[in-house]
Image 1: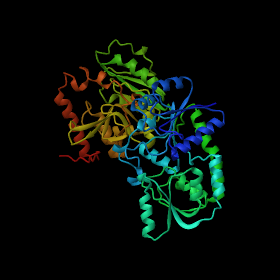
Image 2 (image 1 turned 60 degrees about the vertical axis):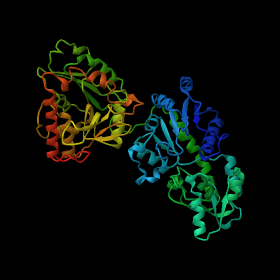
Image 3 (image 1 turned 30 degrees about the vertical axis):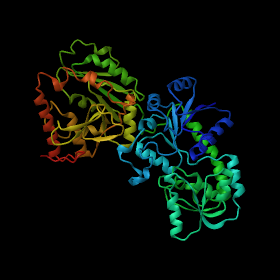
Image 4 (image 1 turned 135 degrees about the horizontal axis):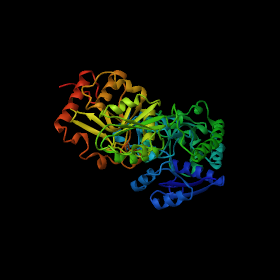
Length: 543
């Protein structure tokens, strides 16, 4: 038996909107089947409720959540898969409307609540286009299209009883003060074209259905993308013609074509069990389904030991505890007096490659050529990932395939020092294209050939730059930072970057190598890439 906590801004006894009607019908379907359901308004829900009910085995379904505090949302984000979202509109956008953007794709600055959607076990969409638009904007894979809204037996009977009502040869328009319903535009349309029309005000459901059934044509010009539009489907069930735009989710469903009247009523009734089963089965799955082309553990991790061997155990523990742990962990040891005498055999790694020379940055990438997995994950010795970092990279690969990393650089000129940062230093909410990445890399093993295709400017520096521009020039492989939402450090490629990386052992602060020399080498690596034809994010040309 399922145990559900249903969380919403309002329920049917508080507001009678389309979302509340649909939620109420679903809740009653759970109750009719003997499931346990507890309803809580978002404004009242807090972390104590979450912990109490989660401990008792409840799953949370979050409907409209405008009144939910950021603190509670962040708390739930840090407990992924414990909740699902019943998405009724577009609460992932500041504008709540994707229709104003080309192909319904909003610029990244308009995206909100991404982590809340990404950490949900499921995001239930109302229609095909609704699901596609969510996936497109949030770049998430946990969206399930329900493909239908819900009507109960009493509501469908009211519709059936009114199907054969005699219809006036006029248009009807729902009267609404909500500007997104665009009532005045519909009125103007009728008056401009000398069309008789009737305004239907708010009234009891039975009266509204009876009134709607008396008119030949239902007219509706929404201003926003309606995720389903119950009224449009009710009009078609009543045998009305419909004049509208493409901004109605139900119109994206293949089943709607050619259906109206009693045939459509019967179909809507038959789909209730389909919708219920989709929701119940997806909630009860032990794990969110993944569809990677290879085994989820088809990853070789390569760690580097030089002057910070004391960080290795912490790194290895974090990597072994990934939601998608690697097939093997290899350790590349560059020679340095700081690691002489360290007991590397005590570490939980699969292979150790000892060197009597300091191969610096490139050595570990040479070792990666010997791996036999689809993916390679390489970590600097000051980088400890959150336990969902590999999961984050694999998810990102599904929508933006490329070299991935935890700290990204977007160049602003042909000088390395003039750049913007991305990843864990700035906590980007969305996948962001960059010019190069460092600290933690995640990439397909086959792309290593681009790194070695030409001799670099120097073997002492700039392997991150060389990999970025060689892959882009010779393989058209872009580079990205996966999302690093501030509210979900488990997704981050580095969770202790400031604590572990800024010390006297950092190469950039090494007293034996001048600061000026280190960065001038990197400047020259950047200029070499641009001379060779590197198409940077900002389209930089050599000065």
